[in-house]
Length: 68
Image (tube, rainbow, N blue to C red):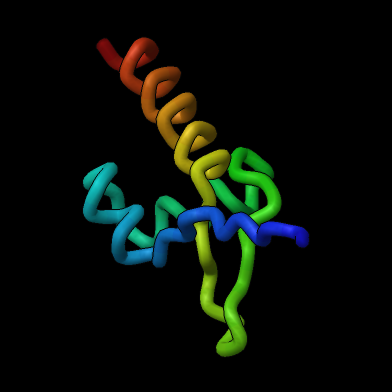
């Protein structure tokens, strides 16, 4: 018997709330290739993974260290 492990996925608004960033910023980082392999649901809405959250944390840390 095979177990299907469902990984947690986060909607755009959840990511924006957690990191206090705008959708425009989030989508720009994705377009620039800083966030990889963003999933999509049946409506073609973005779904972010735990790995995407790690990438966003890394972006935020690098931005803060440059401006700090």
